[in-house]
Length: 249
Image (tube, rainbow, N blue to C red):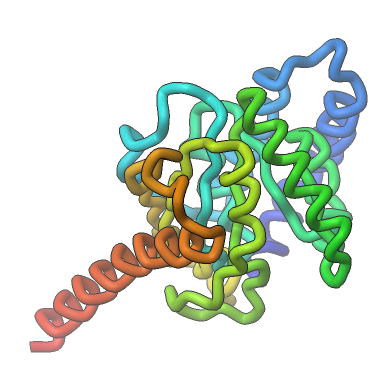
């Protein structure tokens, strides 16, 4: 959390400028297109990342579909996750976020700017409605980022928690490409009390086309996506372990 407060303090004047600007853009869709809003969001994200002293490397961007209208499902490690993805994702993209977290200062303006969706824990009917809305938007050509794990409480490593398969119903309704996204060391920026430069990785895996998963259940699709992400994490951890062994030898 030290880095988080460090960014707030150093960027206080930028925050005073950009928060009202994000809110204004969000309130006036007749003036600002989705591309305009996303460009502003990326501008804000870029300043945060630079101030936070975070370097994120991107792999597999060629796996992102050429056509808009796809869903990205990523593992969840901390506050930096969405920032890390958006910074390296050129096409406009929105996000599904927990309602409680999304109402926090700055997060609220950011989600509103991206016309994101909010999901409420413990309210199945509201969740179904939101997921249906996402499916409709994706079918109309929007891209979304979803974190199937839901929370990221006190994450201190690259381990995976249970993926909630309910959110995969959006993909099945939209019949859209599904892009698994593996986030590596994304817990470090705002999860460690340090101001040393940290490095994270975003890996876009090959898109899973509807023809591949059309006969699957939402639970099966969820398991498949989780397994793809887990494979990347396992390989990364193995390489890290081998590297550590060489240094200690």
